[in-house]
Amino acid sequence: MVTDTRDQAARDRAVTQLKKRRDFYGHLLVYVLVNTFLVVIWAVVDAHGFFWPVFPIVGWGIGVVMNAWDVYWRPPITEDDVQHEIEREDKQI
Image (cartoon, rainbow, N blue to C red):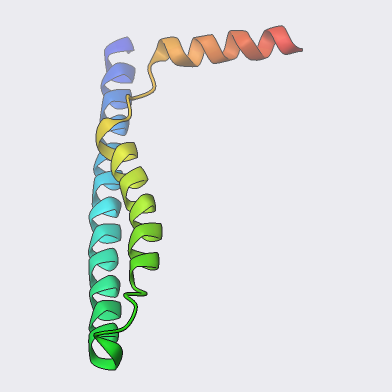
């Protein structure tokens, strides 16, 4: 039974990570498409004027970078982390 629970927990973590990765790629695709469209609008309307698409590119880019950090570099939550949080909350009560 313990093995089944551990296997299920590992599977759940893997499914969660795969969903996060898939969502990130969708986010990245929309970011590239929308910002490309904004740059095209800028180029057609006033290519020699101020490059205003820099604001959504940088602003939204920060969100994309944070999303990538969450998906690829953020350490997973371990059982020790959960136990530590439970103990911390018990001390506050």
